[in-house]
Image (cartoon, rainbow, N blue to C red; front, side, top):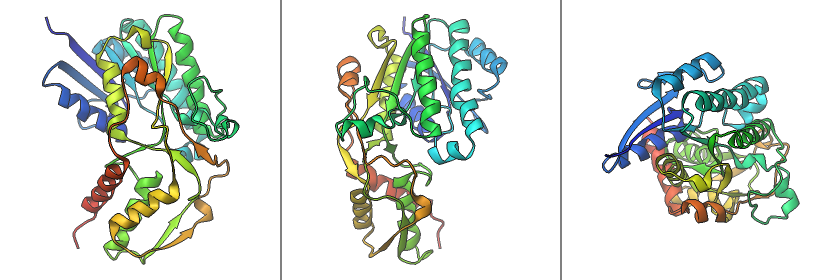
Length: 319
């Protein structure tokens, strides 16, 4: 008898949640998979406020998931800093509500918590640029990182109480459909607007000297889908970096996108776009996830950049 997978995805209508739904849809050819996306303003799925404990418990009780992928969050660091109480309510309290509801109403389900590389914070500075393993200290340097670190620790502790928890700490990831609150999408959008004659050939940017570890969102959701659909007791209770181990300078990403655009551009650094607690270099060691879950990134990052640029071209209204 074929196993029926019942996958509950919070934040199902977000950038990553939408790509995860596509990944699971592609796997339906070979497996029985029922997906319930949860979020605000969904056309299909269920609208649930993760900060409302009763709503969350009812949701898990009704759906009886075999796995929960918890993506719902105030995900942009700048948004979390502007509204810290909301970030704590959603990122920490929402995670607590969902984890306890899973333990009560679906105790056999896998609980896949999406943390963030931002939990490491100052450990990137301490490392001197060496890719961090999951053993690095959690030293968040902004509100977003702090909320994710607290939730990460909570989920790790609940694994000792019986929660089938897998924590992922993804590093920067991008791809088609991302909002311009994130650096790659922001660059691509500006270039497309310039190309369309909507703006003069001047780009306004933040810190171009920083190095970051970038992934394609399609590689990232493959890890989430693998964890959601396979029984991996060896992974329960553990945290896993999702990273390339190859930090890229933001300047090089901008240079590649400008080359793809074929434009001649002036670049101006905008002080408004500079973050106060800037880490010079951040990268991760993904050896653990490769060993335990057989995951590694497959998509060439220049292909990712080309896809992001083409996506923004497609979003521009016709003249």
